[in-house]
Length: 161
Image (cartoon, rainbow, N blue to C red; front, side):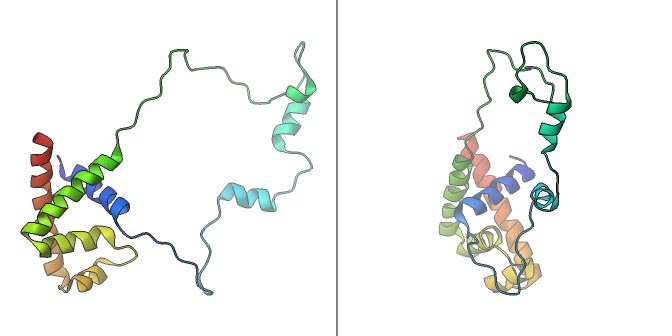
């Protein structure tokens, strides 16, 4: 397991087991951004939808009905034996990380607490997370690196077994 794979696994573990952000916006807070297409549809003005207008300007083919016109010309690219790829189960990786983290809690609760705070707490800077753990930023980063090293060894051992 590489460092990047471990980092991805820890982030996924944080999303699965960590805090969720379910709160209402305050009076002075801005709503989340609206998708540009939704904004364009809200403020744009056309008498006909562009897709319809292009379709009705096109000459019909033999036997084609006017209501079935589609301006986007395309051809089938899939084969009849096409099978969609199956995604690997992501929850199992989060469960493996959780199992390794529980083993770390039994060995060194302070390292486990730093890892939990780093990946489970949302909406805080690293300095804020360090103060939550009761450490200075330098000590927090040192403990975080040590905890990641422990988890990398434990995960590599679990994968090899």
